[in-house]
Length: 422
Image 1 (tube, one colour):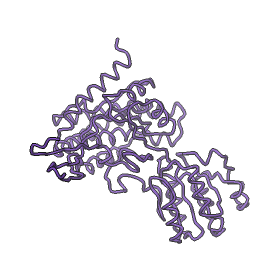
Image 2 (cartoon, helix red, strand yellow):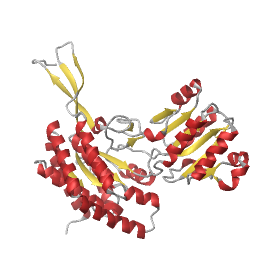
Image 3 (cartoon, one colour):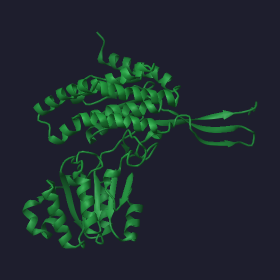
Image 4 (cartoon, one colour):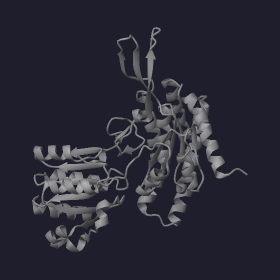
C-alpha cells in the first residue's frame, strides 16, 4: 500500500509533467478551456450542490457558526457567479509572453524581459469552495498547473468542482492532470506539499492566521503570503457624518466574513459627540457586537450597557463576524500609531475632509491598500479592475495587494545576438 507521502508526491509529479504543456498553450487554447469548464460547471451543478449539502450538514452537526457556513455554502446563484467569473477571465489579456522591457547593449545584444508562468502552484486554503474554481482558473489562464489542498470540511464540494474542471480540460484536449486536488484529511499532506522542492514552484496559503503561519513555518518552497485582514477605519474630526455612516456600515456588515471587512473603528475624540453616538447606535441596531475601549464607554454612558468592554486581544483580531472593536483616539497620530501596532498590513481607511490629514495618513500607514473616504471592501482584484485575483498579498516581495494575473507569472531574459562572444 502506498504511503501518504507517495500518494501526494505522485499527484504533484503529474501536475509537474502537465505544467510543461500548460506553458506552451496559446491564449485561445486557454480561453477555450475556461469556457469548457464553465459549461461543465453548469451541467454538473446539481451534483456539485448535492456534494455541498453533505459538507454543510457535517459542518452544522459539528456546531460551526453561521459565518463559517456562509463561506462553505454554494447556491445556484454562486455557481452562476463562478461561471460569470470564468467569462470575465476569458476577456482579460494573457500576461504570458508579454514583453516587460527590451534594450540593446553596446555590443549589439538585444535583451528582452518576457513574462513566463511560475510552473506548479500549491494552493492551501480553508472552507471556501469558490477558491477551488478561482485558483484553478487563474492558474490555467497564466499557463500554470496547480495542486489544491482545501479544508477537509469542504472535501465533497471541492472534489465535485475539481471533477468538473478536469472534465472541461479533457473536452478541449488539455491534460486534466494540470489540476490536482489532495483529498487527504491528514495535516501531513500539507507538510508534504510545502516541502516538495523541485516539483512545486510556489505555495499560496489563503485563510486564517493559523493556516498562514503554519505554512510559513513548515514550507521550504517559496511562499506567496496572503494576509489576515485586521482592517481599520479612522474617522477624523472633520469627517462627514453621512459618509462615515455609509462607509462604516458597509465595511463591517456587507460581508463580515471576508478579509477586507473592517474589524476596528478608530474615532477621533473631537468628532461631534452626536455623530459618534448615532453611529454606534446604528451599528448595534445592524446587529454588530461593539467592543469598546474604556474611554469610548465612558463618553457614551447612555449606550454603555450595549457596549461590550474591549480586551487587549480584540485590537489584533480578525473577527470575520458581526463584531467591531472601537477605540477613541485623541489625534491622527494616535490613530496611525494604533494601526502601526495592530494592523496586519491589509487595508486601512481614513474618513476626513482635511486634505492634509488624508495625505499624512495615506503616506504614513504601511499597508497594501490605504483609502481616503472609501470602504475597505474595495480591496479586491475585480474591484481594482484586475478581473480576477488569487488572493491578497500582505508581503512586499514579488506581489503586494490583490494578486491578479501578472502575480502568477515570473519572467525570463531572452537574449538575441549575431555571434557575439565575451
